[in-house]
Amino acid sequence: MDQQRLKLKMHVFFIIILALLATMVFLLNISAGSVNISLEHIIKILTGHETGNDTYASIVMNIRLPRALATLVGGACLAVAGLLLQIFFRNPIVEPYVLGISSGASLFVGLVVLGGYTFGMTHMTPMFLFGGAFLGAMVVMLVVVLAAKKVRNITTLLIIGLMAGFICSAMTSMLTAFADKEKIHAFMMWTLGSFSGFSWTQVECLYLIGVPFLLMSLLICKPLNAMLFGEKYALSMGLNIKRFRMLVILISSVLTAVITAFAGPVSFVGLAVPHMVRISFGTSDNRVLLPGVILAGALMTGICDLGARMLMAPTELPLSAITSLIGAPIVVYLLLRKGSEL
Image 1: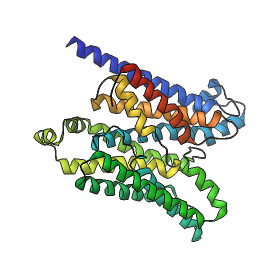
Image 2 (image 1 turned 30 degrees about the vertical axis):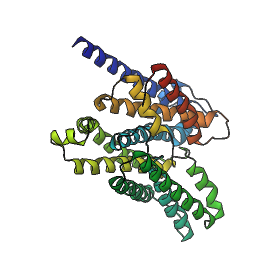
Image 3 (image 1 turned 120 degrees about the vertical axis):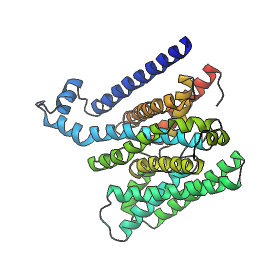
């Protein structure tokens, strides 16, 4: 009993630390850049007080604040989608990027953006982009799920997911050959993953769609725990397996699609963050993991976005390159230090 209380206190302590670190990185993302803005000025701007410098207010409110807010929820969405898929497929190395779900979303966004401009559309609404990304994510997800009914070998299933991703990536590349040359550069930068240029309209759309589905994931902690012991155990607990599977597919597809639509395919967050939290917390209890994964996803994405902006400033690096460079060594270190297995 005492050990359980000690564990609970440790988990609460870790979650508080993650929340504080995520807040610090959020403020650093607003403060740091080609123009450094002090914390005092940031607080005045965010609370609606005059700073005596309109340039600072414009930089914070029009550029850095929407971008920092997007990294918070975007990172949480990717990390939670990765955790749900790892539980769903009972495999520790799956994530939206590995299974080709991000590539499917990218392909359909490419069809919407490049095809739309080709046929004379001058403006793409955020919901239009999200609709394309969601459709692409669902198509690839359903292909993988249908394959899972026929193929029990998890390695074969992963290869099918990878092949689906390659096909989508190849078709996306072919699209660029027929697109307006002026639009290709922006589209290619988007395919490398970036939170650059996030508008307030996109942030609103990201929060309106992403936050409810993040909350929904918190409500299915107990059924997720039951699934960890296998479908027979979950059935004995009264869980409707078919309905629950569809719910997990829906949540993970929406969370993947909403961030891919606006920031492009971002790799490694969905794979690395669940493992970091699982190893650090020393538990597989999803009542603890999910809040930890949400905060750690926001933290890691905030750090990586800051690195992408600052490491080679004024040139901005692809976000997926930074997430891999930072995430992979951390996971390896944690595995070696703890002597753990995935």
